[in-house]
Length: 254
Picture 1 (cartoon, one colour):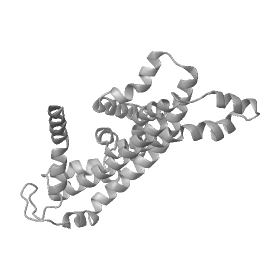
Picture 2 (cartoon, one colour; picture 1 turned 180 degrees about the horizontal axis):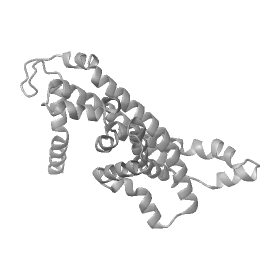
Picture 3 (cartoon, one colour; picture 1 turned 90 degrees about the vertical axis):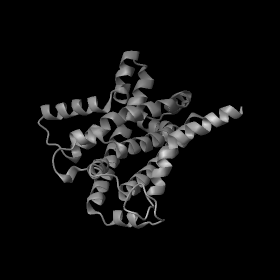
């Protein structure tokens, strides 16, 4: 068993070693990203004064918040409909396709679709694009909750005189709520981190630049401790949201 533990340790080192190095270097006093000269938090202070980054963060939060609301509502209703109707496997595959299709393919398809509609690109197009692929993730996560859903309580509610909306609000929604919240947190995280689709559907100008797009623009001139600090913050927020999503999803499956 010792060799299994050693193998596991090497796997974790391979996966998280570079991340730990990046986090450490974000506190590096020197301007060089690879030479440690002492501990400092000045790069985090510079981030707080960088208007371009702050504007990009604001755009990303707007996109993530709105697209999460859209995808959570639509994805939850889609999950309920699919569980009720039990569609053909081909239809289920179509629903899950946005999770499997490479981002570059989906980005080109969405850009072509918006161009066909002669839609002006901006934050609204990014929101719609993010909602498209997030719906599939939300639907998948919420459907896992329905595997442990006792439909007899819905029938009992209807037999007692409640209409469909009241049954959904008072019976179904409280039961699937952990799965819905987990799906929303996952959708929010995916939207914050997503770059390729946002890059293709943002259009020209800095008014629709999201946080990952701004980081890409900065990193083209070389990696600096300021970028390491940004990456550390993004990873921290993403880790917390994914952790909460997984925890709620496990509770929903229990």
